[in-house]
Image (cartoon, rainbow, N blue to C red; front, side):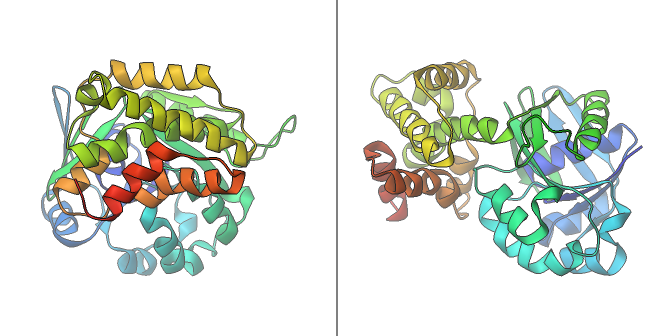
Length: 314
């Protein structure tokens, strides 16, 4: 059995942490505030499709984490936080994390988390990852709701072509453990490509959903909004060239078809907007706009929606 630290027990981290705990793995969660208090008092409850998963696992804040545990106590450390928290958590836990060479797996939105982690901990410790076809949210302290196929795609970041990477055996162990826990998992030889393909979807639907307050199905089936969704996806694919990736119309069409086939899902950015929480705008639309500017290309759909959200509209 594996020992897993899940930094961030929100919709994504809470769901995967519960599935892994249910399968017999030793899981430690980090959280804060009322959610942490509920986890410590009552345990974690996850509503997934027609199931209710209940588990009692250790839950701590970051200060208690550093007091009670060493990073070497874990086989892998998973970061499931919102992307805008990555820099702060690396600053807070950086010295603690440096005490060991345990790999760190990011399951976050955007394409900038892995390079940020690598700058602090070194590239040889970074596993890139993404949660695919999952909607997950905290609906009450200690309670998470999740839906979708809830897949994981992960791989060495950065990948080393034609070389045997020391991280691959751990990835294979994790894949086997995740699969046995009911989490469909794929190992990618080019995780940067997969992260950008997910950003195509995220930039396509997250910002516009926060602006319009519409779910994914309403957006992709609307005659006008669907054009904006597709346009923002195409702008994301074009921006990927700044990172050396060649995403084309085939990728955009595939990602648009994928999100169009989803159930009516509230995006994470829409949920954050409704709850008055900060939006992951910089790590999604901002990532596209920075690279578009570096390439000298326009991204009118993304820049317009981003500007409206930055000015508090929607």
